[in-house]
Length: 259
Image (cartoon, rainbow, N blue to C red; front, side):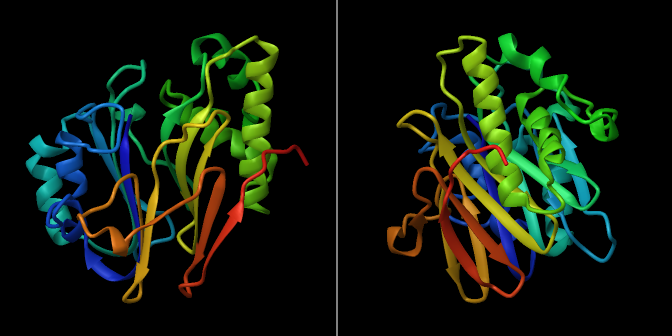
C-alpha cells in the first residue's frame, strides 16, 4: 500500500523531509518497513500551499527515487503546509491522474488503503458523486472517488462530519453489495488552514499512521522518518487527528454515521 507524509509548521524546504531524513518518504518508496509491500513505485505526488489561493500540485508516474525533477523542485519549494505521497497501486492503472494528492479548490486529499470489493461497488458509488464536482474526476481510483463523495456530505461546512458520513455511506454500499472485504484507510484532508488525518478500518487491521508535534511543527506519516520511537506517537485505530494553523492538535474518536 501507499506511503504518505503531511507537514504543518514554519516554512521548510520540501527536500528536508522528502530526501534528507534517515527514513525519508523517498527512502520509503523503495524500502517501506510498515506497509504490506516494500516498494511504492507506481508514481508520486506533491501538494503544497503558498502565496496563491489554490494549492500547488505536481504528480508524476515515475518512481519517486528516479525523478530528478522531484529532487530539483523539492530543493527550491518552501511551504508551511504540504503533502507528499508515493503510490503502490491496488489495481488501477499507473497514470498521472491516479497519483495523489487530489485537489478541489483549496482542498487537498491523499489516501492509503482501499475500498473492499471496489470493482463491484464502483459504479454505484460513482453515481453518488454530486454533479457539481463529477466533471473534476479524472482518474479511476477509489481514493479520488472517496474525495469527491465528501462534497455530497458538506465538506466545506463540517469536514469531520463529512468524513464520517462518507465512510458510513461507502461501507453501507459495500454491505448492500455483499462485499466481505474490508474498508481500510489512512487519509489526509486539508484546506491549508486545518488538517484532518484519519486512521480507520472496519476490521482489526487499519494501516499504520504516526504523528509528531514539536518545535513548532506537526508531521503526520505512514511510518516514522527516523528510528527514534520516543518522538513519534501512534494515531489510534478509528481516530481522527485534527490540527489547526495555531498548532492546536486534538485526537477524537471516529464513528462513521450518516447525518
